[in-house]
Image 1 (cartoon, rainbow, N blue to C red):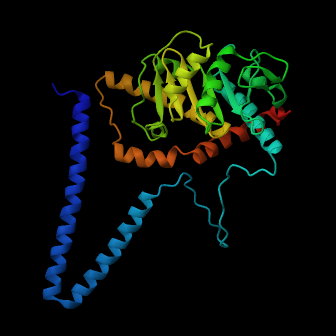
Image 2 (image 1 turned 45 degrees about the vertical axis):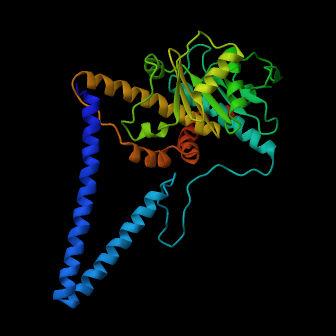
Image 3 (image 1 turned 45 degrees about the horizontal axis):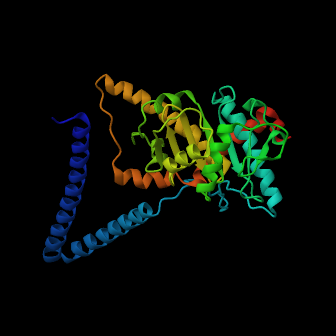
Length: 338
């Protein structure tokens, strides 16, 4: 029996073969025309060769562009010849300045999460590695609402769960999960976990996302599924299993639980979480429509792999969070920076 998914895969394969055949036919036609004109009309042959060379040069430029996808697609040349550059992660004169920057953006991330309904009681947490004490990380206080968190409220914990700076408790599950992720992934600066509605709904299925939208490609071969739900994660072993499910990716779907994302900056990790939750929502809507008889079109692996580099890199993740940070600055008049 041929399933709808198999039919879709066959159509994709047929489409690829058709494109290859068209290119081959075009090259054959150009070759035949070139040979004919070379014998029949030397001047036409020279013209045709010049056109072909220009066409090949153009194709080469396109191939080169495809071979080197950029994370930041911007156009920024002024009329007077100045080249404008998009924002990028700042460089710091000292580690104390970088620590403050990380804490400020961590506090902003909590405000952003609150605005999007990612809060639920005392569940949910975001951590950022300290740039000075690199086996320590900053977390939110256990019982403070995301919308109220300021830089001065953040708690610094060591890898054994001891509070090094601050006067509030932290979530036990937060420590169990985040400490093991930071240990397993030295490249990870920040991790986000929350029980968002769409994330919980999709996590109930214990499956990976389908590559059905451009935004889903941020997680192409870069997300895992943790299927071994054992209640509230409060021990180190549970944290290690979650870290193993995450692997070297940027996200994990925790079955019957919620979502988890990581990044090289708290900005990146927070944006991946926002995007992952929206992608789960889109997947659920697409699944519902498919149940009504509509067929989903899966993006093929070649296109997915290329586009993932454009939309899923750390620089893109960091930049994509900056509008949310700016929004919090404007809305709170910088209250979270205190």
